[in-house]
Figure 1 (cartoon, rainbow, N blue to C red):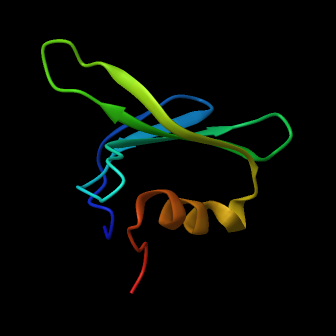
Figure 2 (figure 1 turned 120 degrees about the vertical axis):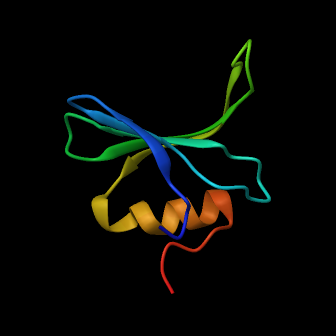
Length: 82
């Protein structure tokens, strides 16, 4: 809720969602579960129609579940809790 997450799209090993406006220009976050039971996170900037150009602004791998919130806050500048 704090991120304004919407348009959630998931499959068996990943979740991608759109977030609200932030200073770093991240529009989408993709979190993928790796076989090592850690996560790879991609912070994306997706353009508007009709081209929907996708640019990876940052990628972080080997993220443990307890670090997900901290990484999101670092990469977006948005708080995930009050």
